[in-house]
Amino acid sequence: MRRSSLTLLAGGILICCLIGEAACVRSETGSEPADLLQGAGVLYSLDAGETFSAEPPTISPRTRATVMVRLSFVVPEAVADPSGTGRYASLTLSHDVVAPVRAMRFVLNDRELAPPLEDMLYRAVPGIDPRWLTTGENSLVVEMEVRNGSQESDMVFAPEISLTALRSSDLSFQTGPLLGAFDEESFTVTCRTNMPATVSVYRTEAARRLDGLEGMERVAGTGLGLLHRVRVPRQDSGEAGAYAVVAERDGYWAGRTIEPPSLQGGGLRFVVVGDTRTNVADWQAVAEAVAESRPDLVVHVGDMVTNGRRDWEWDTEFWEPGRALLENVPVYAVIGNHERNAPFYDEIFFTPSEDGRARNWLQELGSVLLIGIDGEQDWSNESDNAHWLEETLSQSKARFVFLFTHYPGFSSSGHGRLDEEGHPVERPARDAREIIIPILSKRGATAFVAGHDHVYERSELPDGLTAITCGGGGAGLYRRTEDADLQNPYSQVFFDLHHFCLFEASSDRVTLQAVTPAGELLDAREWRAR
Image 1: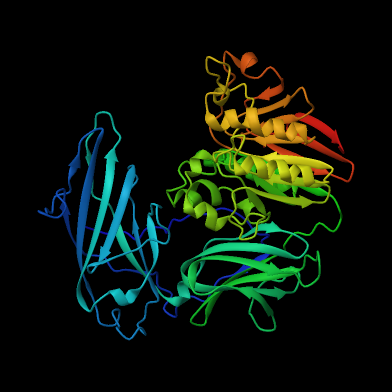
Image 2: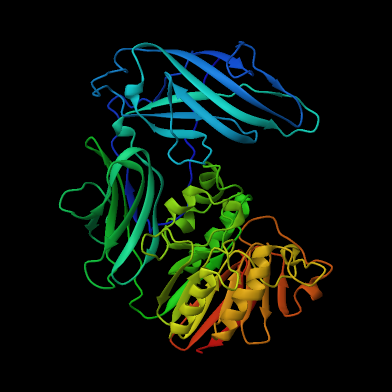
């Protein structure tokens, strides 16, 4: 069976101001990375390895099956060098399975391969040590629990599997570099490399295209690994400047220059977007329109991908279609239900918090206090979260307060449905309406901003708080329900169109514009300082 070398897929997310980039020098031969499984013998088992067959198994409609694929292949001595000085630096195991997968397991020469992050599903497992190979006969076992989702057609399970051998000269960024939370003293960068490498941040000349590393000052960095998170101190308080983010291994490097944001002008221009998942063309159109608006930062109110535990979707659904925006603007993230508490979410986003991983975060930028929360956590009246929010707002002197979450408290669409007693059916929406919004109203907050429903809606609540649903970033659009007036009697504006929300803040006012990718203005609003 012919084995094709698959494009490496992995999770992308978010951001960096891309000025220029330089890739590491390729190998002297210029050849593509080698697929060690070309010509491999392939056997299949449906009984946990008790019996094997050369015939690919057939899975019946609406049926799950655990399939074991065993591949036998030969590695020459030049590849399997036990001294560690062989010609390859790293291996990547890839497959092309598109059917729903619930579990995966990979074993190379009786050694189980640990994925980069637990509880994630991968189409490409990078960073495998080539010293696990042996000269001569080798064995790879791939085990997957898959489901045939068809209602009537059988599925023949014969995945294309490759084991790609990478040289150090193949080093590249797989995701990022991405800018996260920043302030006057520092900024943050995250990225992912396609093989274990170190990542350094160098101070460089403004708008310089990288052609070498000589003469640059290293100001921060990480150790050898695949996932990299760096907080970079600024040379002068509030300065922007230019920096290079460089991955390095064995004398080879790949780098990009970035310009972290600075708010020395005093104002703040930020965009809110949400529910960008699934429909990549629509998300790409929104992302390109947002990039043209040149915000200082983007707040994403969740549902970046269809299933956050499928590692490849972070690239195919979020990073790649959103590059026009995500390579140039810091992103402050709020987690949605479709992220499914994926560990990759906490690695690639750097929130304004001590370690950058807090799901509930806050930061005052200029005249605006930004608060982001995980609305699926416990927000009951006596919870630690509710006390934290109450205390935060009671101590804040900010002239404007915006809270961001995935779950709307009032909605005229599907996620705003009510039970027989008039409470939101969904628990996070109920907490938003009955606990979070009252705390915000009591403390004179400006606006409560959510996603979840794939619409634009602005509601003006009786106590002066504005509630906004900004869920039109690319996912399939929703409609008003028949009970919309009962669900949300405070609705002022409603559109089932793709859009984003642009906020501009000065010392004494904030303006809102809700805009479609084509530039149509859907809504506008202004708030004066509280």
